[in-house]
Amino acid sequence: MQTEELFNLVKNIQRLKTESQTVELKAASGGCPTKLFDTLSAFSNQDDGGIIVFGIDEKNGYKVCGVYDSQDLQKKVNEQCKQMEPVVRPLFTVCEVDDKVVVSAEIPGVDISERPVFYTGVGRIKGSYIRVGEADELMSEYEVYSYDAFRKRIRDDLRTVEGSDMRLWDSERLNIYLSAVKAERKNLAENVLEKNIYELMGVTQNGVPTISGIMTFSKYPQTYFPQLCITAVSLPGTEHGFIGEDDARFLDNKRITGAIPDMLEEAVEFVRKNCRTKTIIDENGRRTDKPEYPVRAVREAILNALVHRDYSIHTENVPIRIEMYRDRMEITNSGGLYGRISIDSLGKVRPETRNVVLANMLELLKITENRYSGIPTMRREFLEAGLPAPEFAVVRGEFKVTMKNSKLDGADINGKAILEFCEIPRTRDEIVNFVGKSRNYVMSQIVAPLVEKGELKMTIPDKPKSSKQKFMRV
Image (cartoon, rainbow, N blue to C red; front, top):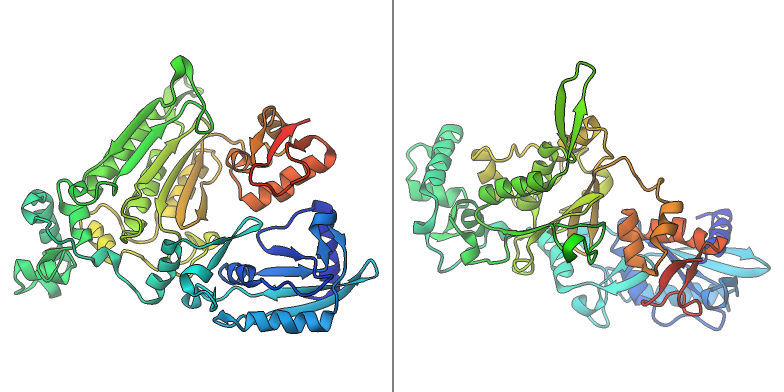
């Protein structure tokens, strides 16, 4: 970072009066902060890294207070960086702002194969952090595991399920699969016994069914994994808790079970049933009924959730969730992005596959193409329907697809709609969910300017970062 860039960053921080996903502030006028480990870990564990700015006092209106000694500060920060595993290599910049010295430490994001970066003083589980908005939060045991799973190439879709019984499997589907293997994997199937095909294709391991085999062929996988299902709800408002007519909290509510092919079709039917339909009359008077969501895109989103969710022991008690609101639909599954792919590159590059065996089984059954065409298909379907492109996000180990059913986007609701939404006090999470964009963007680019203009007020103004903070229209 150049000194001019640091100067401009400080002025922008003072204008917005907030930290962010990639910026942490420390006063450091009386000495070097002694506990930077949380932030060093959190910034290192995200792709964009982050910047710690020393010399700004957020408790005093984000005024520049300057650092006590820029050279000693850099030395002590670097000493803390050496206590991380792997060692963090900061890049320092020093500049003068308002006749006071400000120092920044740029913390690079490390490659996913080296994550999680953690403080060696307390170990991997207690010393690994992730950045959530402007806060550093301790990683869950699952989040730590997900990095280890990728690095060690742990194959959770191949884990065996002791006590399961293949006699309860769908024999017709299994026969279709075996025929497909013999037809499309001829070099494998020739002169190979049926039971050996099961072993070679990952349906069983040492004669014991795998989770992939059970989720594909069992008539009722939920015998062994009750929560490896889909919960689907249709809600009367734009958020949970809204009460509709006749005090209805849900318009429809269903737990969808069965093998993956069965859950897929039943979930698509649930969405189809609960979709509102728009009637279009063309210039020749012909009528066309148009669902609010493109059905093909919905199918791809649900299929992606079923195929690419995490099937480890850490998430087997968490179902896939379909939530249909009046303005959008959200499909959420356990397991963030796998490997080195980012949200921005989804559908543009060939990603690594978390559940290779499961994906291969469903490909042979013609359930999925397994050609990484799902997200491009979703985008194309929404474009042709004249709707905003689906939005993808990863939050605390979960992958979420948000589909909007109108052309209303973030730009449309930046002003008037948010003020109307905040006629009653709203939490940060409620506002972020309403806008449907990242927490950092909503709070820094929308909420902060409205507060600065005096159009929104905080319910706890003397504690702006309080977890109980709400925002209300003035």
